[in-house]
Length: 189
Image (spheres, rainbow, N blue to C red):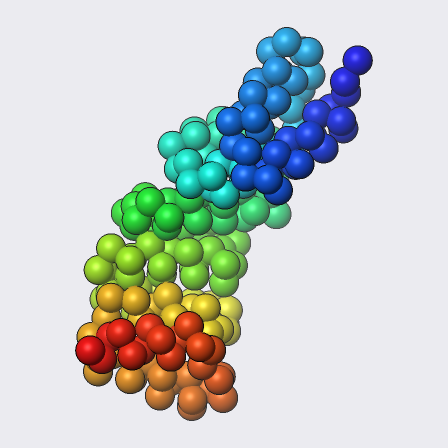
């Protein structure tokens, strides 16, 4: 009979393959049919599978359930939150991504990955001013924005803003990547 370890491993395998429906099915089967108490690892893997499968609704629902069940510690909250925020970013749901960043489980423990996803969600939805403000907030938290941060912030901005961001990168001795330069070129068209 399967135990929590084997079920978690299977959900993790589904996560790596972006098989979100299978991950959710295994999580449900473990809890309902096998009577196992799902742990935070299984939930985080299922949330990540949803994110990789571009499924923001089940990712958010699982995150809420994980919080409701009290299965989440500070580190688990950030890992689960990053996956949910990334799912929102892929769906261009910048208000939801921003509210998750400001929520109780991510407000203090947000990482650069969290900020990059929210910046990308805002910029992808043509909310460049909010993306720039988030870039500044990440810097204020001493998270050291990287080329991913600056590239995400450049999406959808004007040419002058992209050039200012490139200048900021240069002043921080951060070499722009090819995607960063491409984003700047697109912004300058």
